[in-house]
Amino acid sequence: MTLSLERINSAKASNFLISKKKIVLITGAESGIGKSTTKVFLDNGYRVIGTCLKNNKNKDIKGIEYHKINITNNLDWENLASYIKDKYKKIDVLVNSAGVRLSGNLETTTMNDWSYHLNNNVTGTFLSCKHILPFLKKAKNSSIINLASINSVRGVKNMLAYATSKSAIISFTASLALDLSKHNIRVNAVAPGAIDTPMLASFKKDLSSKEYKKRMRENHPIGRIGKPKEVASVIYFLASEASSFMTGLTIPVDGGRSIR
Image 1 (tube, one colour):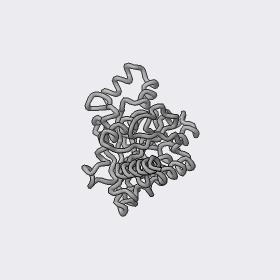
Image 2 (cartoon, rainbow, N blue to C red; image 1 turned 90 degrees about the vertical axis):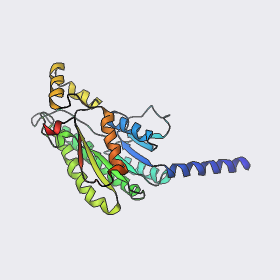
Image 3 (cartoon, helix red, strand yellow; image 1 turned 120 degrees about the vertical axis):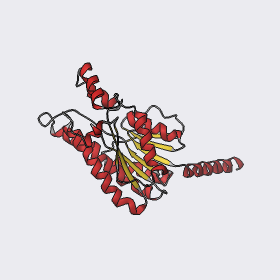
Image 4 (cartoon, rainbow, N blue to C red; image 1 turned 135 degrees about the vertical axis):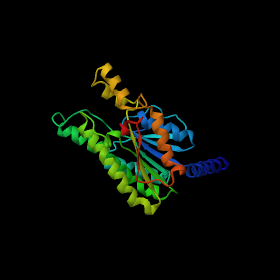
């Protein structure tokens, strides 16, 4: 009986500690900017819930748990929301990092390519916000950070569907910020330039090595591409009290590309 009570008390203590910690949900947490953002929040004492499209092998990292979901699937979000309701009750920060990018102009972009971008980059963000909103309402001074792109505000060759889908994130962010201000929930976005991630590696395949290096250097006045951690740091800033008077904004993290 004594052992049973000890276990019960231990479970209660564990649940209490979880409830006291700030919790962030990060989509696309397994790679690129999402992976770096996960580390920044972990380093700052957050408990992290990360979504991934494939089974994640890094399940033993303290303070983080991964959930395999398709962010475009409403039922997957319903199941994850049910789990969060039972275990955590609230979410302090939502980071919508998951996204896709394919090359293509008007002539080469198929309907499948078009839908692929809109479903993943726009509908996925919409579903994430919709299903996590009840938990953000239960937290104090909660925040949403979406990932747009510098291509949201600057034209780019051969990425028509991607640029269009990321442009929608800017309007979505501003409109959602107005809707959620009454709940004391801030909504902002970051617009990265070229960042050293697997997504950029796919773009690199479209160009010769010489052309790729020349374009990256010329497009960014700083003279180089960015590191995922440099974007993750701005995401954390937007989630923190340091940005408490900021909402509805899209912040370029682009090495100066937007002022070209």
